[in-house]
Length: 265
Image 1 (cartoon, helix red, strand yellow):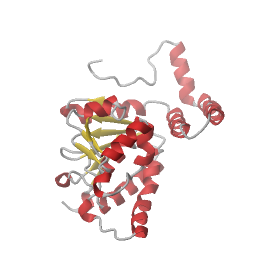
Image 2 (cartoon, one colour):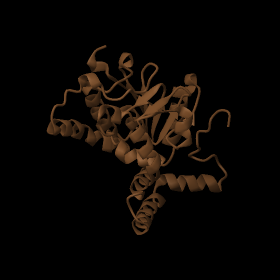
Image 3 (cartoon, helix red, strand yellow):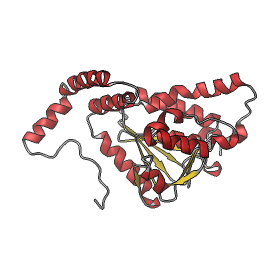
Image 4 (tube, rainbow, N blue to C red):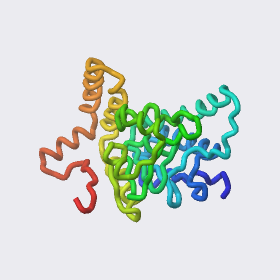
């Protein structure tokens, strides 16, 4: 498989699907894939017609992490530069003012786990497996995991997952808050797409403001968050979406936004 096809990008009805496409290597991140992800995330950030993003892996795995065979870093400066080259698009994806859903099947190891944690919601299959194996190769968690993991699962559990480098299954990942839903393997991509499309129906202004405020909340204080709340609510009150939502509520018409529940709910 050529490196030019390491990432497949498709946009349908405003939903951008990014598919890691090295299935024979369990979608391990190599340099061409990293470059393609950077370009895709930058384009999505600039393209307002994209209303939601789905991250997935080709084949039977999400992502096994960085491609160790391609890691030829011999000094500290080169290692730091290698990571700095990724941090721009990682920060953009983490703070993207639109919904991001990760569909995880098989392994989400190392940078693969970190990439999934950049999403707002992780939907997984029963066979999904998550691991921060960095200690096994003498490295520290990367791709944003030092920021996202403690915020998602709490500091004590983050320490345990990082220092033990142990694998956890889908159900344990759900219990600790990393995984949002577990669905059968044959329903994974349909459910991820359903969530993305449902969330895309929310007010883009309100969603973006709320997401970015939540991202800042753990490093802020009450006064600062109340100020963000006031500013955000002032903007949201002025939107056409809010006015139409209120009109529909008063007229007892179907709402603009409804959470995409599972078919069995």
